[in-house]
Amino acid sequence: MNNFKFSKEELKQIEKIKQRYLDKNSLLLPVLWMIQEKEGWISEEAMAYVGELLEIPYSTVLGVASFYTMFNKKPKGKYHLQVCTNVSCMLRGAYEIFQYLSKKLGIKNNEITADGLFSLEEVECLGSCATSPVIQVNNKEYYENLTKEKIDELIEKFRTHLVEKEF
Ligand code: FES
Image (cartoon, rainbow, N blue to C red; front, top):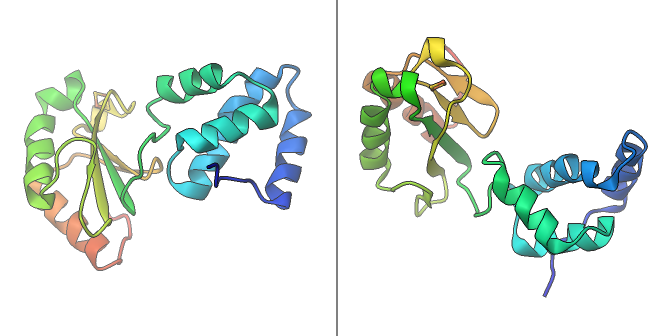
């Protein structure tokens, strides 16, 4: 059963976005992003809904959603932590950071904590190599030049919901 639906306002927003594109396939990225903003992830049901809505085959929607790592295909924690382990970050201790976070939170790659507060994911270059090692939180905030001490501080702030970027 398909439970995902856009609201009337969201459908109006999609109509507006449509006017910017000649090809309906180009609409997929912004519309998939809207789903992620609304739900925190993109379920197969939501992909099927979007396929029907935009008259695009499900296989195309699935292909696009799967290609981009920015789209979450599984539910994520309230704080989704993406740790870059690409070359620059790796050379500056990204794997130690990843292992440290994994142990601290008690979850492995692509898992979510039992309380739903955190999820962890290893990702490719986040485009901030000069300030490695880097993590991205909820596809928005970057935390750079990380150390285990900074991780401790950050996790504590998230746990107490006192998140203000200070480093
Ligand atoms: S290698 Fe990590 S941000 Fe580029």
